[in-house]
Image (cartoon, rainbow, N blue to C red; front, top):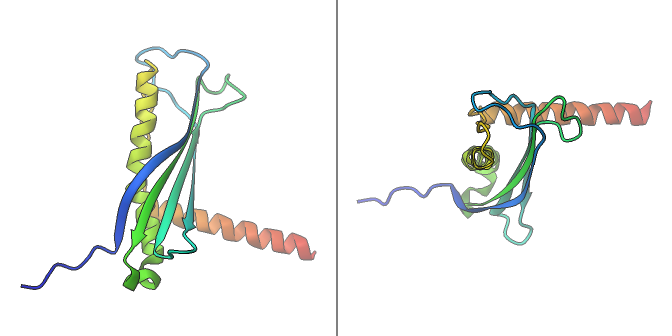
Length: 155
């Protein structure tokens, strides 16, 4: 019997690098907290071991300086450690980047819900996201900003 194929992407571990929580105004128990949420992702490759990389998800929610707009401010940064099988590095890099964010995001969602629930306020529950769509939008914005910077530099 043939052995099953190896999975191209391995999730090794994650760590929480940063948590910041500020409660300005205690919301009512049945009040839903509505926050502007910003999600940023970053991929860092290991120079010595190109099949290993770190996926970083940074999320900020609420307004830090203008509490009239938001009863809560929170910021989290979570690092996930991943590995791609060496024989598939070139073929699966983009696939691995998108899927590593998809794998790590539920941990970040749970962290945010836990922080707010343990603060004894209505928990902030981030909705599931379409990671592939989000990553495509991020790339479009980066390309637009790069084109804009190049245009401004040469005008």
